[in-house]
Image (cartoon, rainbow, N blue to C red; front, side, top):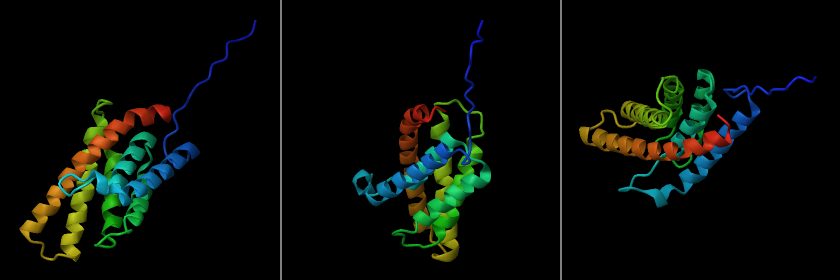
Length: 178
């Protein structure tokens, strides 16, 4: 009598898995294209930061190690240099954001709430680290009005990014079988 064969599917996290690496690359490319075409989704002159949204979604799905998330953030920061009025700041802010996302996905949150909470907090971490570095380098000292304006942009961007990542996380995780 023959034995019944079973296939055990092992979830491979991180960037050592070729499918995960390709997925992150595709998401970064999507983020670049949407960043360049983001004007059509403006809310009161503000729009989502598609690079943050795409690396949040990537990290949520792929679950990279901390150093891999830092690399994703650094690459996102390099991409953010395209068309920025404050060069180099995004290198730090996007790296901080990606590391924060990698840490937040470890929290035991319900599946439906996880993309909302993690993306919102990640976008704020990235946004406020951007504001902090800008205050130290470009606008030293930073006026309260500029700080308030930049903070509002960070909160609106965080809310918009939450919507994007939450809507996309369910179908993308099914496609990636995670």
